[in-house]
Length: 75
Image (cartoon, rainbow, N blue to C red; front, side, top):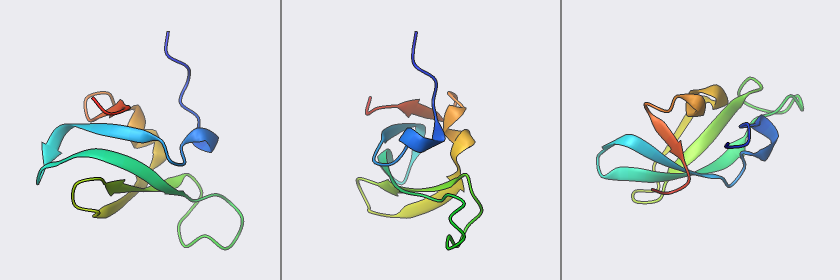
């Protein structure tokens, strides 16, 4: 059984897009936005970076739980 995904352990974690777009398949979580008051985004959002293009995108961390879109690790 896979351990539960938690917000606090996401930084620098690796992810694979199930349906790659623009050759972007592998991603790394490069920023985790928490409630420290200085974050430009609400708590719970993360920034992920494509290994291929270095393009970044922001999303709520719970989107990574969608196994139809994301797999943990680089597959």
